[in-house]
Length: 70
Image 1 (cartoon, rainbow, N blue to C red):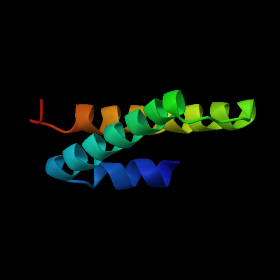
Image 2 (cartoon, one colour; image 1 turned 45 degrees about the horizontal axis):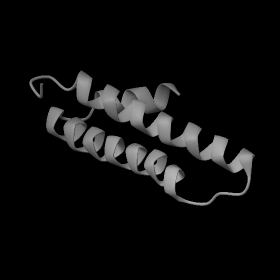
Image 3 (cartoon, helix red, strand yellow; image 1 turned 30 degrees about the horizontal axis):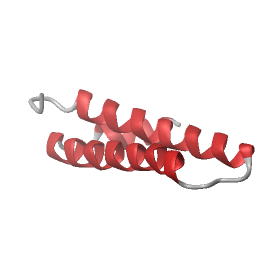
Image 4 (cartoon, rainbow, N blue to C red; image 1 turned 135 degrees about the vertical axis):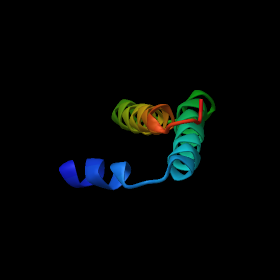
């Protein structure tokens, strides 16, 4: 965990903004796909939802911590 935080601190603000935007788009796409895809397994829906929300939150945090982007 601390390695990921250290790697995120080393990114430029423009890199944080790009990665954060991509993360938000991927997270929203996963969550949106769950609404239209016929997934039979409830466990798979929960896992995909958790992954989508996690990616979305990380993307928001990356954009929020990049200075001068907002």
